[in-house]
Image 1 (tube, helix red, strand yellow):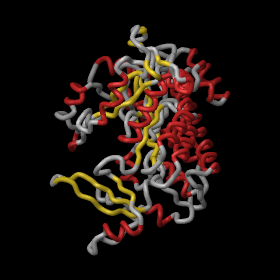
Image 2: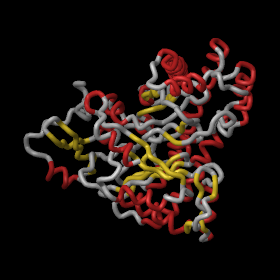
Image 3: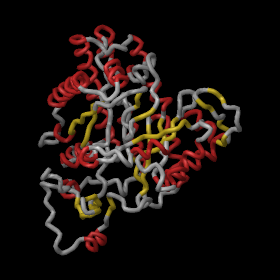
Image 4: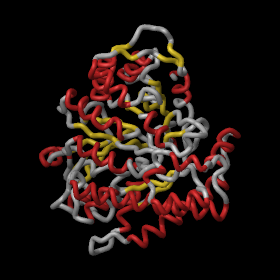
Length: 438
């Protein structure tokens, strides 16, 4: 892993974008204790996110049982017991929680749930996610991503334009499916696998903006009910269009009627399951929630399914000369003062609850950061994490103030007065984050 990470010091994407890696190890791997501590050293694996995987056969339920009972975890390597000494589950979990609280890593990837829900469970196992955790992938799997700007489907009266959303979801499925056909791939194995399963990742951005336009609080039950209906609609529309594509162009080559036995396929409407049985399915998977960090900024909406980060914040960014910063007053706090909430003061369970609702309707996975107040108790974090671990495919945390030079630093009114110089340009709500010239 260290050797792979060093490659990232050399390779850069277009425009200087850094390489992004996901490095992961099963929780019952004999080297897991060393692995979970590696990023406490801020000089190690700087190009990678690191996560623990709960593999098939040792999922969340087994981990919770062993943590609460004080059992040992038997070390395994590639499915075979090593015969080495067992690892204390409670002690290992305590270290994972401490490190995630301290540094934001490791995250936990629920591979057992991902494979139970996988539409190609009969074909290939899912082994890990991409760097941001939004798509569980088989060997040589690849991402084909696009995102709906959800706030654009709310009209001036605050109602959702379901007809427009239906039309755009269908266009997006066809568009992304065409991308798979015309794309050039860096390896033959990736090309063959991509066309064998035809995996898509249609996601969203601006969920919190959408809720604010509808007068709903992110942390409220009514807000989650709205999101439940919204994502159920997107799910069923996307799958309906993929069956139509299958009738026109054929199912993905690895398709089998066994797909209808997957955990996720069982959540589809009866009519769509019947269409799949008749026509097949064009894509092994269709939906995801990616971070959309940069693209969300360009569109002037909240990113992915994250809440507004802070009503006022200091944003640090890199320039050719080094690092600079600017104070931003988020336009949401001006437009929606009555029901604004932000990630810097929201209880972490509100994040978990929203991720759980969305994950029910997403066949790939959900990229979500659970934000923690600086003084949030580790014991409470442990209990919350174990509570929601069985129902989400991936989890990661960030505790405010846990790292130096945070890209976003929440500011209170006094801090804003201290940070803002007299010559700061007046806030322009039409260009909330300075990206509008792009």
